[in-house]
Length: 147
Image 1 (tube, rainbow, N blue to C red):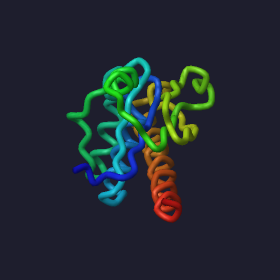
Image 2 (cartoon, rainbow, N blue to C red):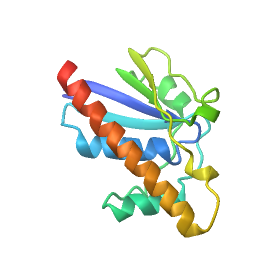
Image 3 (cartoon, helix red, strand yellow):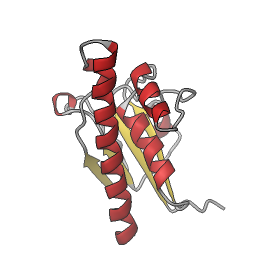
Image 4 (cartoon, rainbow, N blue to C red):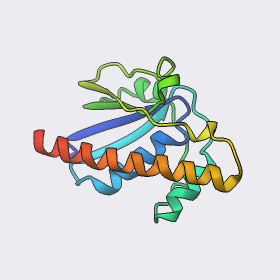
């Protein structure tokens, strides 16, 4: 019997950076009755900047694969929450997931668009990582109170 009572899905366009970080943080910080997955509208390849900044804090996502929202939909997966993590500029492309109890929109800058040296891009990605971690931790606390 599946003991997971609350499932959520983090969604972005490519499932290569922000949604992957959010999924990893959620599953690390949440209790056993909570489970997150992530997917994208146009699954891409994991961003090497994201792999590196997550590894810096002891979370290895290097073996993760980008997943498709449509594949999850076709499998009949249902989620209590769907959280989109696209930046404001890409919000219109950020996919919606049907059959959901609640859709929430969070906006984070896309590491794929960062410019500068490798170290400058890493620093910007670390900032996004920390923003996502704070938002995920606050959300876990919020739903733990209300569920």
